[in-house]
Image 1: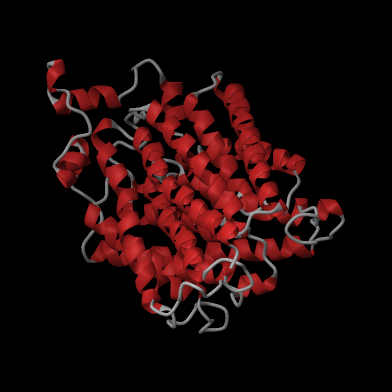
Image 2 (image 1 turned 90 degrees about the vertical axis):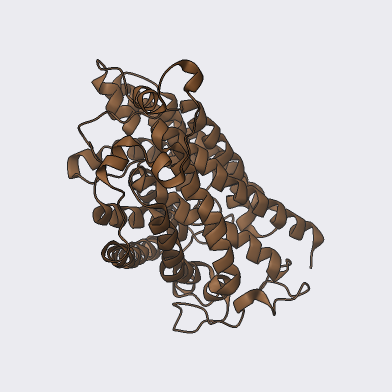
Length: 436
């Protein structure tokens, strides 16, 4: 056991844990006043539910010895009673328990990412049940495919340094399946739905960016040159993605928005996640620029295709995850985490085919499994709060609280919530930008 590497992994686990509250603020600022507490709670309940399931059986399903041909682990480590403080994770110099808590934080934030797609309209208990079922049936097996030594995508040679497939594509395509079952918000494409607190969004983005260094660099499970390369690539791609998003936004809408800057940063972070150990810093700039611009364009698809992805999980995490997961097949230098070279570095199409295989497999399985889970919940306990409750505000209905006390301002909470959550009447362009 290397105590330095162990300390580093534990620190990175704490950084990744911080990302879930960061995501809560990022999403919470993007919804209307009447939904902010519910949005925060949808992330925080993931911290509770997934932690318990991870200890009981999740870590074992994801990372213990394979049980079904590379599809899922067995239950030898159920309850984590036999890990032992001195047992090392396979091939590394850190204890299994350190690896387990680091990976737990990935398992927590992945379903939390999905929550932004169904903001404003779902019962809290239905969401909690969905999280439990989804991580069990979807996330734990897919994590085994991608990261376990005997997982089938890992053995195929698919490069996913920190979760382009298992986290972002998985959450993004699940979000699409979920919104197709849950349905649209009341007033979708009719009522303006501006974010109520852009400083919250920027704060959440900053916390995500900070924690993402643990997310990416920590995935090497040690502190060396590969770790440093992953860290610099994370920073570079994120910076480039902000520029890419804002450039397209300025050309399309005529403005540089704070929401665009925050969304561009997240798009860059998503895209570099699977590729940060394979690319050069220059390649990371290219990836970031492409991801920022393409994701900025993709968030408008929901208006054209008619699916109500409230906070653009599909446009950012699914699209950004696909771009980033394909990137090693094109831009891998062969000089960082492995000697694998991408197409643009003379490696041919072999790695590109492997990356596309990983993308396709996760897309297909996650969409179908999520759709089935969502339909099961719909026909049993149901998904939606009532239309009247949605209009009046989910915070008061589901949590008996409001995010802000407006009593001292001389108006009712309901009236103030509606006013703050609505844009100026003469700003149709702002509605599209903000909701995107």
